[in-house]
Length: 598
Image 1 (spheres, helix red, strand yellow):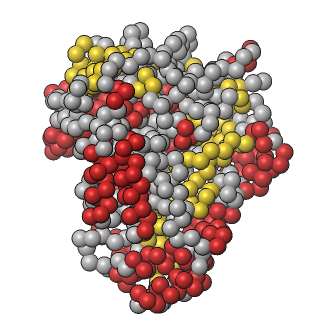
Image 2: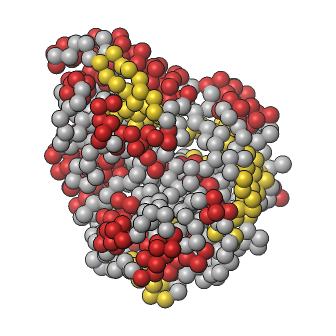
Image 3: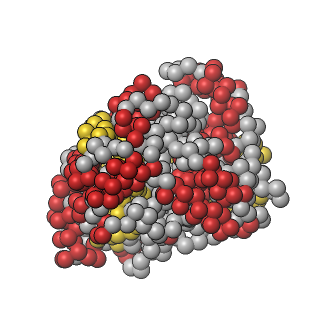
């Protein structure tokens, strides 16, 4: 499933009392850590990776790219202050923050001031070739509230950056939509108090409160340097922006034809000293003309392309074929991504349908957990190699995961009789619900399975398909509250490991989420909020873990939403692909670490 972080994982507010990691209280060396090593031999560097895609990018602008697939490519074209190096073990193992454009940093004793020391001699490529300076990071952040396309995860910065909220509110009040000149004028004449360029190579960031995962926040592509003299000329992520793309990474865009193809090439003479991205491959050619997962799979099998893009899941017969004949070219990793069913149950609003009224009763929510045949959904995705049935809110790669099936049934096939008993007890023996989902063949298969399986318990579901482009806005529109009772939801962690605050600490914590239906979710629990506050106050991630576990238990037992499955990432590749490496941020392959062997 292509997980749109922009819609489904819009980020969470960080804790008011979370403390910085003790290891970061002094200068940090430039050792890139566990970056994958090149294979020996002539084939380690060079070559062209051919990619078959079933759609064009959702976004290439570092301010807006928030789909997992987009992040895989943006990693080639941008660098950040810090990053993750990738892991050959799995997506969930890519959790070590290492220096990137910052060769070192210092943190004040109170954990509020981070001072980053930038590398010398790192230049842009593409529409600019000047050297990267500290002001370029400040410009990128000052661009976040642009009304023409606000940064995708603004809640992180609302919570953490000193002076950002005041700057954002003024920006939103004074700058109209559709005027790039007004955007530039505002940015040039206003400052964010928490951002200072001490000199060209020293960036100082002041926080509103300590946060042990602030460096994780900085790994996200949003805080990538941008040259104002180029970027300010264009609307965010417009065609003109893409055609005049400025890269801070090891690769640049050679050519781009929307919905047809893109060629990305290694910057001539690129010196990757200090860059955790090995950048082995010389050229990436992405063909957007493929229409189905089957078509991409066939192209991989015939050697026309080497890997797929925006393809998930791969057809079950393709996965089985690779398992039987070339398992060395089938790459599998738990992802931490989850597909679930959210509940239209705003605390502050009266129910508009009988279904919404019923869902306020825990027994009805429990009945849905028991009624759904999750094993059937998993089989439809290719079996347990591609997905694992879940009833727990947090997933296996996140801190706070309990590895408990809170609503266990034999073989994950559901217990319709138990569901019937709960519905009868709650007074809703003939429950009828409207289920909204994002239009795609994959999603239709998932939710027709849900529709069929809950019918065994006497539950009637009317499916409400919504075009993908309209989906998030439809769920969040108060005027459309009566059109759905439950809806497709999902998340992919913004980062692995200590990323539970994004879900439990943000989406489900009513002290921090924006209210109403956000990302299809609305939930309130005083007990959960209390555990989250304890996690925020913990001095380290390890100390916070029991509080995240308890918050996870509360949300899972209370059925804050109905988990369906955790995605296992499965990628077939041609036999030309070597050094397979996973990345946390893109929730898939680290293209910058792959090699091509002819």
